[in-house]
Amino acid sequence: MKKFSILSVLIFIVAACTCISCATLASSFLLTTGIFSGTSALSTPQQNFYAISMCSAANLEDLQEQKLQLQSQGAAGYIIFKDNEYYLLASLYDNRPDAELVKNNLHSQNVESEILELSVAGEKFSGNFAQQEKEVLQNCLKSTATTYKLLYDVAISLDTAVFSLAEAKLQCNNIYSSAVATKTNFESFFSDEALKTLADKLSFNTKVLEKLTKEEYETETQNFSSLIKLTYFRLLFDK
Image (spheres, rainbow, N blue to C red):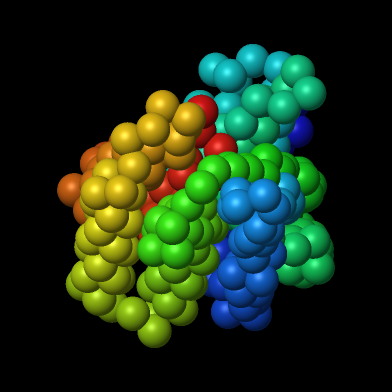
């Protein structure tokens, strides 16, 4: 099992957040609309992300202590299973250069880490949609990516004292309200079984964000910055 030095993690969190800006995800999640034989096709491409993994193990239980320590210092502490290994993840970026910058910064603090590439599959829906229906679908398809970007920005603002804790919580409440509105708009227009996967995703997103606004921590030592980061991991990668 790979291990990391807990002492330097807090330095990593503040330094990394100060020097990194998340690229706008909207450009990566541009929706394409094609018209053929009177049918509209709306899609999002596969999106790649780059996570900082602090350690890995063959058994999930072997990461629990490190997870608790990491979350108490503001990192996500999200565990993912990939290639027959469990990885403990601290942070997430939508481009490799930002992740490399964090990895190098950690190394300068004598903390070893690795970059884990993760992907979110693209989606595509076809049908005879009216213009307003297409606009609603477009907003729904890009909602997870948009929410990740918003939460990422709030976490950085909180870690660097741009936002107070109260301001960060208010922003998270606004993000939740926006997700609820997106879900409500979808339900106002669609009940088609063919769109059930999208409906389920929108419902899942609102539930995860509601847990954030209610401050449902995993442990007593987890702080709000960690909970924000854990939330955007869950939105993107929980099944």
